Image (cartoon, rainbow, N blue to C red):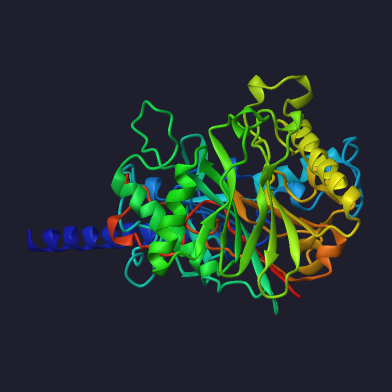
Length: 506
C-alpha cells in the first residue's frame, strides 16, 4: 500500500510537471506568435489582427487626444498627420501653382487621405467607465505632467487588438513609455515696430447659454469667468498691439467686456475696441450668430477714422469682414487691417449644388469661400486705386487649408502669403506644412495672414503659437467632465485654434 501510494504521488507530480511545462510552452508560443509591426502603419491589415497580440516597434506620435479624458483613448501614427490639402493642391500637380478651380489633381488628395486613415491607431484603456482621472494610460497626469500634447512620442507599444464601437483599438499590456512634447514659447517675429495677431477665441459670448437662447459659449457665470481668464491670459501673452478676433458673439457687449477684462488685468485703460460700423447687421453676413472684431493698444497705435466693413453678397451665410486703418505712434506709418472669418466646411446637406462636398478634400461650401476670397481681393483693388502702395494686412480664420482654392485665389490675385514668404513653409510637403488646428487627428492651418507687397516688405516675421491645437480639450474652460485639478488660468487651451502673430518693422 505504501509503495502504491508513493507511485501514485510520483505519477501526479510527473503529470503536474508536464502540465506546467506545457503551459509555459504554450505561453512562450503565444508570445512568439505576437505580430511584430516595424514599418508603416498604413500597410497593416488591422482587421485580420483583431483578438491577437501585437508588438509595434519604434516611436509613435500622438496625433489626437480628443477622447483621452472621456473614453481613455488616444490616436497615434508614425508622424504628425496633415490634412491632405495642406500640402496637395486639388487643382495643380505642382502645389506652387495657383489655379483656384478645376479639380485636376483630386485623385492625389484622395490617396493621401486614405493613407492617413489607414495610418492611425487608437490606443485604449479597455475600461467601460468614462471620465476616469487620472487617465489609466497616463497616471502621472496632474502630478508629473500638466498635459498630454499632440506631438508627444510613445516609445513602442504592445498589447491586444480589439474592436470597440466599430473601431479597432490596441489595449496595451504594460504602462506606456512616452516622451511629452514641450510647450512652446511665444514665436519670435524679429525686430518688429508693431505686432499684430489673429485669434479665433472659440465662441466668446457675453450671453450665458441657458439651453434655450442658442448662445454658444459658457453655460454658467463660473464657466464664463474661466473662459475669459484664459483668453485674457493668451492675449496679454501675445504682446500684440492690434488683435483681430473671430467668434465673438454678434453684439457690442462681448467685445466691450473683453476689453474691460484686459484693462482690469493691466490696471489701466490701454486696450480699446473698434466696435462695429453703422448698418453692420444689414450687411451680408452681419446677421450671423458670431462675428469678427478688432481690439488694439491705444498706447501703441491710433485708429484712423471709423471702423469699416466689406459689403459683398459673397459673405451671405458667413461673417462680414471688418476693416480698420491704424497708424503707429512711433513712426506715423499706417496700415489697413482686414479681419475675416470665411464660411465653414460643414453642413453639406443644406448646401446648393455648387457648394456640396465634392469629395476633393475641401469640404462643403468651397465655392462660397472662393467667392469670399475674391471679394477680399476686389475690395483691396478698390483701395489701391487711391493708393498703389497701400499697406494692407489680411488675417483670419479662412476655413481653408493652404493648398485649397480660397488660399490659391488670394495668391493668384497678388497678395503675399506671409507664412510662405517668411516662415519658409511653402505648404508643398508634410515637412513644410504648418498648422493652427487639429481635426480628427489631422493637423492643418485654417488661420492665415496675407499682405500687399508694400506691407509684406516691412514684415519682420510670422509665427503660429501652438498653445491650443495640441493641447487636450479637457484643459479648457468647460466644467462638465473636465478634471477640476487640471484647470489653470493660463494660455493653454484658451481656444481650439492657435493664434497667429505677425511682426511689422519700420
